[in-house]
Image (cartoon, rainbow, N blue to C red):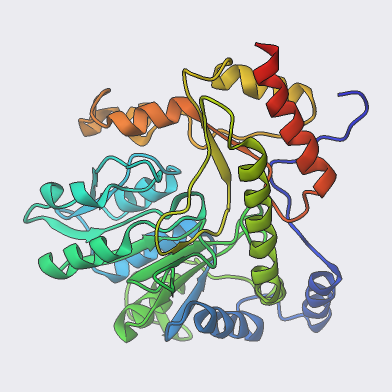
Length: 370
């Protein structure tokens, strides 16, 4: 590495505003879910363009609560994708429902053209995952959901600010967001449910608070999935900066595209028609036409002090923990091929121009080193 500091694959952009906001909460002493969470919820709902936003403890709990609020449980099926973080599928299983997987297309998202054939009389919802920050084809998915009277639960955990046809991800059905430390905006841990449905919002609020509307009067079984006011204070300040963060990510993506676009065998990510990409990750595909394998590229870049990530090396249907669900190797060929090829490089807003130049130089050097 020659003394060069590692360029992180992700890094939270925390400024003085966030520090002061947290300090104010600590000094006030009201740390549990309170006024800052409520303020964050209102601001986030306005940002997404929906009536309600319900803060939760994580993106995973946002997914689980959304499913439960839609009354999805044992005997029901939810259609999703095999190319996602395991939380998407764990959330479905946690309700007692069965995940039904549909292969992806070249955008890394669920192939909407394959969804209808996966629908049965037990299907209750479609859960598209807006992977890496690019929305799935929400026009086709919405049409299918309307045709079969299905709920849409968007896993928008990586898509803060992404848009389809000028409409924010998380506003097409019930949206689920994560504010984990690596996301485009962060509260450390935390999540958000977005919806225009009064009943879903009310049910979600009960579920995250032990089924309690009035203190110690419990209307149903629930959980402690509340967000703290510390996280809420962080979220308020991070949301103010999200657009500027995403603009920087977009500029970084454009830079990579201009510098690396001519490399044979390296497939760069593309933004689909009528979509605004949030660029949570900049994910390339290293194909057999590239002079090095994906893993060789990763080893080389890491050795040069360039952080990389493989999201995700093992598809959902090939995870050992799901062996008993009946999925098999070869069932989702696009997903399996992509999982062997993907690699992400730093795109977060704290990457400097000189670091971007260095990353590109090292990748370009691989072609000449073959």
